[in-house]
Image (cartoon, rainbow, N blue to C red):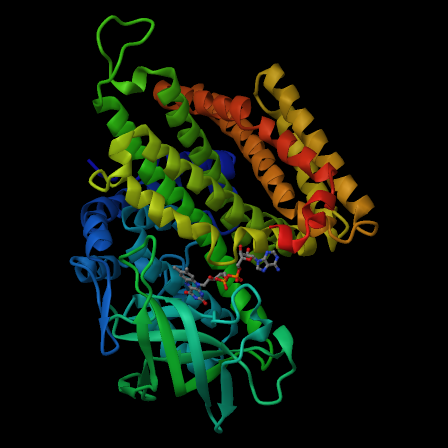
Length: 580
Ligand SMILES: Cc1cc2nc3c(=O)[nH]c(=O)nc-3n(C[C@H](O)[C@H](O)[C@H](O)COP(=O)(O)OP(=O)(O)OC[C@H]3O[C@@H](n4cnc5c(N)ncnc54)[C@H](O)[C@@H]3O)c2cc1C
C-alpha cells in the first residue's frame, strides 16, 4: 500500500543534532525552536500531510488536471487539502510577521515543506511556489504593492507563480521577448509564457504572476529584463478584487509525471502589471525567488525519494520470494542481501540529502544577520539542487526495482514516484545549468576561495569526527582528490577553453558525493554523541549503520567523477557533429 508517514524523528535529528550540532537554539534567531516546539509543530504538520494531503496523491495522478475555455479543473480533494493547509496557518510559517507571517527561519519550516511534498508532489507545488513568490515580493516590491498583496499571499487567499520561460527562452533567458509598456502608474504586459506551474486554477481567490518582461529601449540580453507583478484579477485600492486582467491560460501540458499539477501556457495581452524592483534588474530580483525554489526542488527530491523508499520497504517486508543461505523456508525479500543493498542505498542517500537541504537553508538563514554565510549558502545551492535531484532519479528507480514487475505496472504507485521525480533535474535550472553555475560563478570566479574554505571545513570536521579510522582515511583520500581536481581545473582553464564546460557535471557530482561523505561522518558523530544519553539505542545505531554504508558504498564515486575531469575536453569536443 502506498501510504506516507513523514519521518519526523529523522527530520529533527537532521536539523537539531547534525545541522545545529546539538545546539540549534543557541544560534541567533533560533532561540524559540527547542526540541519540544519542533516536535509539536512537526507532529501536527505530519498529521495533515499524511491524513489530508497524501490521500489525494493517487487520484491526482490518475485524473490529472484539465482545461476548458481557460478554466482549469483540479483533481478531487485538492480544494479540501488547500483549505486545510491554509486554515491551519501552514502557509505563513517562514513569512514576514509584519504581514501576518510567523517569522520562522526557513530551515525550521523546511521539514514541513518536505512533508507536504512527500504527501502530494503535484499539489504541493502550488503552496511552495507561492512561498518563493512571497520572498521576492517582500524583498524587492515597493510598499504599495506589499500592502496590497503580501498579506493575502501569506495567508493563502492568493497564490503565486513564476513566469520566466518562453518557447525560445528556457535556460537562456537573454532572448526572452515579452514586453512591458509604461502607461503611467503601471505597465501593459504582452507575450506568451510556457510551462507555468499552477498558472491557472480556482483554489485561491487570485493568482499573482511574477513575470519577466522587457521595457521599451531596454538593453539586449539579460541586462534588459525587468520583473513585474501581474494579478489574475486587478485589485481596488481598498484590497477588494476588481475586474479580470487580460491574461489567460491557453492550454495545460500533457506530461510524463506530475499529472495533478497544472503546467500552463499563459498568454498576456496588454495585461496590467506593476514593476518590482528597479528597471532592468529583474533577473537579480527573480533570483531571490529562484534560489529559494532551487533549495525547494532539492527538498522535494528528498521528499519524493522518502515516499518511494517507504513504499519499497513495506513491499520488501511483505513480498515472499526465494530462500537465503541461512533459511530453509521461503522468506520475505527484505532478507536477500541484494534487496538490502537497494533499501540501504536509498536510505543512506536520503539521510545525507536531507541534511544537505537543511544545512543549505540554515546557511541562508544565518546569512540574514551575518553576511559571511552568504558565500557558503551560494556555493552549496547548485550542489544541493543538482545532486539531490539527480539522486532522486536513482532512488525512485531503485524503489521501483524492489517491486519487481509490480513496480512497472501502475497499481502499486512506485511508477508514479519514478515519473513524478523526473522533473526535478529539469526545472529551476537543469543539472547542466547548475553545474555551469558551480563551476563558473561559484568556483572559478573567486579562484577557488569559497571551495577551499569548504574543503578545509570538511577536513577539520572529519578529523574531529567519531568515524572509524579506516573510513576516516577514505574520507581524507576523497578530500585530497577534490583538492587536486580543483587545482587541475584552475591551472588548465586558460589552456583548454572547453575544460570548464566539459568537466562541470563531473565536478558537481564529485562535490556532491564528497559533501555527502562529510555529512555521513557528521551523522555518525551526532548519533554516537546521542547514544550516550538516550534510551532510543536502535534509532541511533541505525543512523550509524546507514551512514557507514554511505561511506563504504558511495564515497568511492568521488574518485570516479574526479578522475574523469583529468582527461580534459578533447574526446568530448573532437567528435564531429555529423558523426553523432
Ligand atoms: C513541468 C514543468 C514545470 C515548469 N515550471 C515552470 C515555471 O513555473 N515557470 C517557468 O518560468 N518555467 C517553468 N518550467 C520551465 C523550466 O524551467 C525549463 O524547462 C528549464 O529551465 C529548461 O529550459 P528548456 O526546457 O528550454 O530547455 P533548454 O534550455 O533548451 O535545454 C535543453 C538541454 O540543453 C542543456 N543546455 C542548455 N543550455 C546550456 C548551457 N549553456 N550549458 C550546458 N547545457 C545547456 C540543458 O541542460 C538541457 O539538457 C517548467 C518546466 C516543466 C517541464
